[in-house]
Length: 313
Image (cartoon, rainbow, N blue to C red; front, top):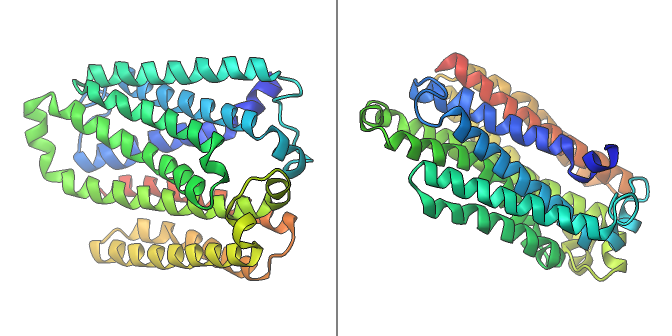
């Protein structure tokens, strides 16, 4: 069981579920002034969305481990991948297809329930992107990084997308809440942008960390093609842009009177400054590993900051 939990990256799944729940309970519901699961998405529909998302994510983790089995033998000497060791490649393939197909089917069912069956293509598209990422995009400079960052941001947007169309099925409620749509659109865009930027930064740092294994097995990531120095410059550019954007967003919070949200972003600013400071001096794999952890903490604090909106709405 421990190896299976390791295979599916259970901490990442917990954060994903946590993120989707928080944006619904602490941004969308209070922003629209509606009751969760009684107006808009029902509990069953939201669970379908969550399980569809995490099943497709699990499939992505598994197929990534299958394609990365050789590079991981160098990049993760202290973290043996279950695939090829405690879990055979054949079993991993079966698990990949089982989770991925189930996730897509759950997404199609949800799309049908909100009368938007064409939205089932979103889940098929996401699963396809994860497969192409593992097989091809992962070893192309920046392409794989952008794919992962996009899918990370998509999980925030999906909650609002399906909530919006679930609300549209009740004309009375839709008319009552539509004046608040602009506010929700802005906040969802802010957090989608935040998730994209932070994920992109972490992906670039992780590629630097994994340089040795990727280079040995012909995976042409950005560091392999352009070198460690150029990759550090790219990571620094993203980090500086992220810090500047964070400060700009805080200014918007200040002007709009969201003082709790303003304060909740201060730890993010401090951590971005720390990342920039460490990046300027980073030369060893352990340092880049530490940076990766700090960036994960930034993402977690960013998700938690959404709770502040609940008390100011």
